Image 1 (cartoon, helix red, strand yellow):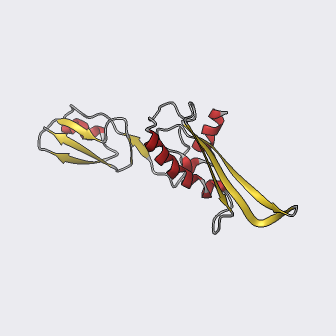
Image 2 (cartoon, helix red, strand yellow):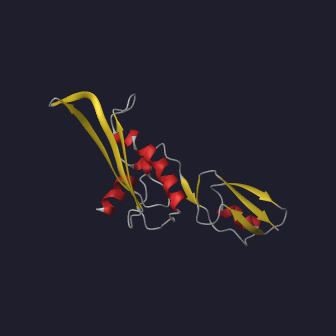
Image 3 (cartoon, helix red, strand yellow):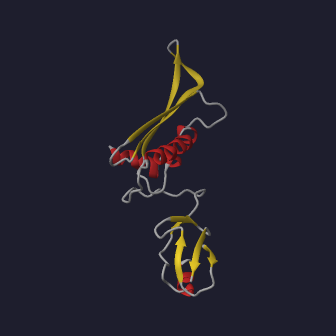
Amino acid sequence: MRHALESVVAKGGGKSAYIEGYRIGGKTGTAQKVENGRYLVGNYIMSFMAVVPSNDPEVVLYLAIDNPKNTALLSSYTTTPIARRILLDIIEALDIPKQSGGIEKDLEWTDKILYDVPDVTGLSVSEAKKLLVNFNIEYTGTGKKVLSQSPEAGEKLEDRGTVRLLLE
């Protein structure tokens, strides 16, 4: 079940709640409201349930929006972006560590392409440049060898993001 919930966030209607490096499981919900035994026209409850980390849950989040206005009538567009912001705060507050082994998100045309930052510490500037072809590079120092880098190796950075290198 937890794998199925993680699949919803990585590959289904919960993609807007996906957080790189964290195993988030979730399920969207859209319920038409009833009054006096009849469905109300255009009156819905949009919801999203999330669990983090999905393989060893520490937190369960339930978010519901009663009759949202001026939005698509799909919970994947209304609740999941809000849930993502709440989950980011929860992850920070509880110091939940990143994990590997999660399901990779299916990219959509609006998603930014992310690359793993390679480890260039100890390499020459010319060797580092070859490995950092997807990034902009800023240098501090004038030497020919990389002493440290930011972001650290293994972090994900969007295409053309900036990697800062401290040289000898």
